[in-house]
Image 1 (spheres, helix red, strand yellow):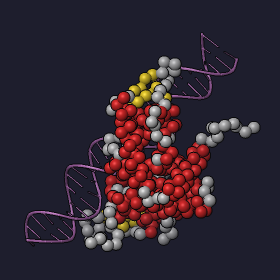
Image 2 (cartoon, each protein chain N blue to C red; image 1 turned 60 degrees about the vertical axis):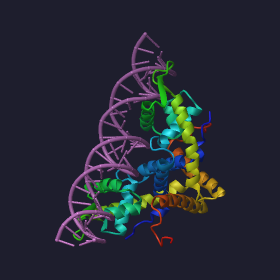
Image 3 (tube, rainbow over the protein chains, first blue to last red; image 1 turned 60 degrees about the horizontal axis):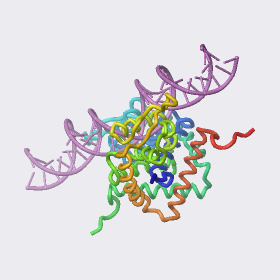
Image 4 (cartoon, helix red, strand yellow; image 1 turned 45 degrees about the vertical axis):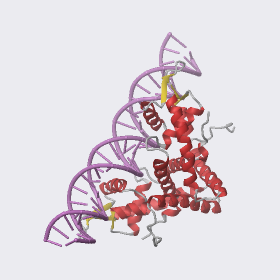
Length: 154
Length: 154
DNA sequence: CGAAAATACTCAGTGCCCTGACTATCTGGC
DNA sequence: GCCAGATAGTCAGGGCACTGAGTATTTTCG
């Protein structure tokens, strides 16, 4: 009695979507490198020398998870981690040559996977899909980190 | 160089969406009961006496995760687990009175949270949002479990 | 300069999520 | 009746994700 229809619950849908993606990633992209690991590699390819905190911020991970992911990538020799001589609290990160090669290889496969993943949607629907999810996620994140960009109201 | 734009990657978006939801759930619904735990409770309220495998299937969890979630709910006295006398492999599950009360209480809060979560979207956009995500997730799940419903061709 | 506040990172603890290997039970065909 | 195969559940192992507490370093301010 009085049970709820989970197909209209965004959280449940989000979880199923992520699981579906996880599955496809595993079969079509890599069993070694995970999607969050690729995201970290990706930001380091674009901006070498970032510190851990900033990397986490860019890809949407908290401190602890960022540290774990970076630890794994480091152990596999895909990135280097050196103490910032200017600020002893920070570690500066950059992808190794091996890391860049891996990133390049996975970029291709990721693009293919995204095609398959989104194949049920038309071109306009894909745009909608991105836009709607992004708006919801952004809004929820702003509830957490209120008003960092631009001016604060007076 | 040659880095990729993650905002057009459905997997990355899915992860961010789920994280945003996790956050909101924690603050607006419960710090004790998680969203997957609520989903299990929900299916047991609707269909008491299901076995573990079926529960997992209904809410979209694999065997191992289902066992963990059910274990936690059992330890908190929110569900009962008894061996099926008809089939000694199965455990039959049902929500306890306490479990049903918890479910009722969280249902209300969950509805409120969904309102907040979806507040950036108009009514039509919400419909679109559900529909698009569901189509993508369903399609990917069918890649895994091909053609269970209806007749097999031949 | 020196103490207080802020910042970057680590660590412990909990929970979700999957795979692959294993055990127990049941079913079907001989 | 028996055995092979299917099925339900467990367990070990790896990875993601969060919180809260703790350490080291830097910045700020009196």
